[in-house]
Amino acid sequence: MKKGFLKLMALSVAAVLSMGMLAGCGEEQGTTDEQAGGGTKDVLVMGTNAAFPPFEFVVGEGQGLVGEFDGIDVAIAKKIADKMGKELQIEDMKFEGLVAAVNTGKIDMAVAGMTVTPDRQESVDFSDTYFTASQVMVVQPGSDIKSAEDIKEGKKVGVIMGYTGDGIVTDDLGVAEGNITRLNRGIDAVQDVKNGKLDVVVIDSATGKALAEENGLEVVEDPTVFETEEYAIALPKGNEEMLNTVNEVLAEMKANGEIEELAKKYN
Ligand code: GLN
Image (cartoon, rainbow, N blue to C red; front, top):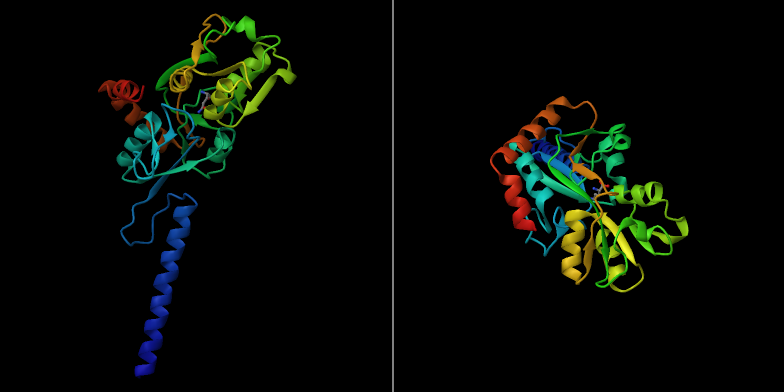
């Protein structure tokens, strides 16, 4: 009798443990399915490339809004998670892989200063837009680069892989492949301008300005060539409910001035 009871106990403990493990696995894979009890909140997984200040960047562990992550996008995503009653989890990945990660469900949304483009719209749905930017050129002080025309020939031009800036430099300006260096992170590209490996980096305006200031570099604008771009949140195709919630949060944050405040705070 005693033995039977112990066996039953052991079995239940094993069952509870494996349930817990399953729930844990789900969390790691970023599922938003209901957790198997235990009081843990569902998670909302945001994918980003955390080398894009002031939108997303890494600070000391525990010093960011979420773990080591901070920035305007992190603040927006946190509001969305709060609205859904979920806990925000951040996956830091290559920018280039974000659209596919949303598309395949590896992440729930990409919040990454991502410009709405027709190409991307084939794979993901975009929320309403929340920020207007354009490309700028980050150069050394005293550089002879004064307009986009000046980087068309004979300059070592850096871009970030998969960014809109890459397309503009490659397709619109027609810079020769041999003169283009494609990097994975904005932070690294700007470092290469600083150490002279590159003459110029073409990157989004707010980020270009933040990184130029941090590194004693200058920003050159050329609105005749670099058109405005609109940032939005990338979501899985056809998820109306999520799209509506995200748009509701963005509308609230625009109406009460929170987005503007964030832009000021982080700039
Ligand atoms: N806005 C640019 C793009 O969408 C760059 C975004 C980013 O680096 N996070 O391509």
